[in-house]
Length: 490
Image 1 (cartoon, rainbow, N blue to C red):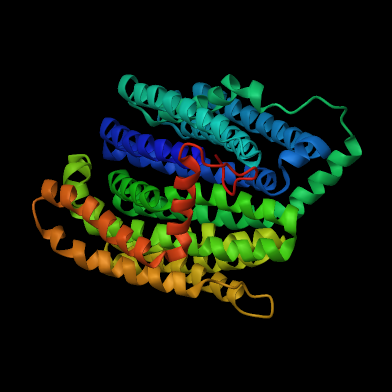
Image 2 (cartoon, rainbow, N blue to C red; image 1 turned 45 degrees about the horizontal axis):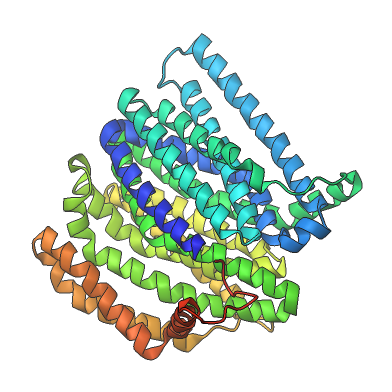
């Protein structure tokens, strides 16, 4: 449960931090910050994501002892790419000081984005290694330290130096420093390096990871493309409205999905090590039922409380556009979560990741085409519609590929149908609350939604969650025997 606890902490602090930075910077500067952040995420994805994904797929407690060259290969590749990115950031900073001495110049923003990308890459890599070792306590400490540093440094930069470049630099530093502070327990035993083995691992990582990072880079291009399009046609302030709505919506839906993926995919990898590929694929199918059961009510519940959330939480300067954008984005971000946490794992287990690229390319193409036709008809909201259509189409194509053919993924369709019916029941109960006073709507809506959906999940044991909860409760009672091989990260 340490992984889930860490993500609850991470989600809560990131949510508050995002709103605070948006308030301190204002819509225009926050729009520039969001655009640069999207660029940093794209850079991190292109440079480092293939190695992070390889760490989650090929590194484990057994590999740590029996195949140390896996970690050596990962470390060497990360070090080389990190140094190259740091050199690029320094070069941009030097050009910025000499040619465009302004904190808002293109060179300064690019340097800040590079530092942010470097920090994100270093942190995500080491966090993936810790998760692969199923060391929940160390992972929680790493996330806690990172969030504390990020809150202090990023909020402080936005307060004392209210310019996007310094907030970007603070973001990168906070993540890198968190890794440095806890690097000792994350190290592997020192053994001689086998250079030939290291080269073999690089080829393995490239063959496995490059298709996935190509797809991920395409999906990260979507916010960059869409925010840039809005900024070009409607100004940076409008891009700021769009960015805050996108950030809050995707975190509300995707944060729990990320936590589940970290837990469930590592479980599937461990099942493959112990029982073989067929058992791992069955585990992935069961995981899909859990993901849908837990993420669908998050999307429905977010939509239901959106008007109250905007009034009570969102900074005043962003109200109005926030709900207009977020309401359109909810289906698209739910589809993205389904791709990342439900469908992609089967291709990762099979090490056949090319279909993920094809779906991503179609989604990007449809999104780009929508930018030509929809904004003239719908205004800036047309960009959000184009994004949702692109993500939904990509999810449909990837789902067809995963669920058809002789090697199709077997899903627990009853569990998925039951989760849909339970979510619809919850939505019907919450719908009248959208039109009442915001404080009462939020105070009543959240517990009511949890109670209705939770009762249905418990009564029908959707996705086996009641059984899991009762088993964990029985293990936590005094005198209860504890299993020697837990099914999840403790």
